[in-house]
Length: 422
Image 1 (cartoon, rainbow, N blue to C red):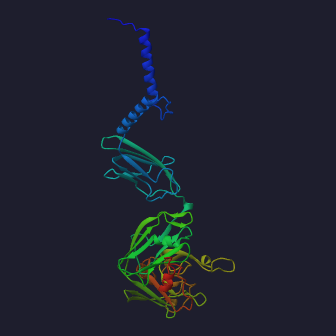
Image 2 (cartoon, helix red, strand yellow):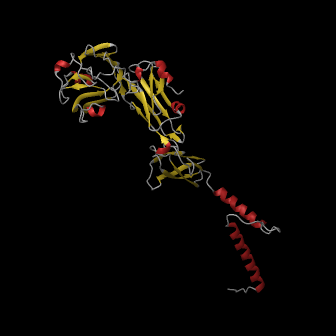
């Protein structure tokens, strides 16, 4: 093989070329170069860098990933804010975790254009999202974001009744209790919609800064369906305090049952669809402890419960309750303050229909243990549902306050509508 010896001149020219090439590589690998000298000596390098950048751009994925909320967001919604979408491509992987690494379950849509978590997020929690997508050429794109959801101190929720999917009586209002005082009542009320298939007009009334009830002028139409929509996500209920609920609730109105308690005759007439189905002897509040008058709605039912006079202000000289019965049968709540209609096994059978002896409740004959279905107390319990109306008359006491329980029916329609914030 022939050997060639490089002369000094050729060696110098070779080193010069290598140095120039190395210098070009160094310039091209930098994020941004300095100003070119006045002689334009770097113009070749700049042109080469632009060509490489253009070539790299042509090799980059066309997929455009968007993560919401944007990176660094605070007070993010726990309902609708977390989402990943892509244009000019399809999602291949999305991972969402809490700051401590706990995975959040989610699903990529069938068309692979979007992703959402499977459940509502937690408040006051930092989440991290990592997403990958590919364009039509199979080139990958990546995006990352981190955000923090709204804290309990900066958000409010409304606890509502009745529950979704239930069947209730004709007197059941929609009642919402907010966990923060609401000062922007109009804005919050705009986010609450109550409608009914009966076509009845529904109006909402604020009892205070935390409670709003909604009802029609007259009892709900039996057999109708009522829908409550809460669109409160992001609504500012008070300064710096935002709603987080986005929910639709439906419930059905059952048969029309209204019962009339007459403390004077000591009888209760139970009506369904306006027809009397049974008359039951009762014992209402004694002359010293009269039962409230007015329209009252059954809000809770207990097959057995404890009733202690000390909890409602009936105490003896030692501060103990005047009564403490641990197994009151077939008890149904009529007021927040402690008015019930319930079974009574401790009173003589002769008092029902003849004497008012209670501390303010309405008593029906019953047996200890609540297991005899043939007693008046058991029959009324079995044939009543949450939302049924009990109208108490002729006790000589004042009419129950509309906000004492679910008893807004004791306010006339004009007064009721005057309590709207809209």
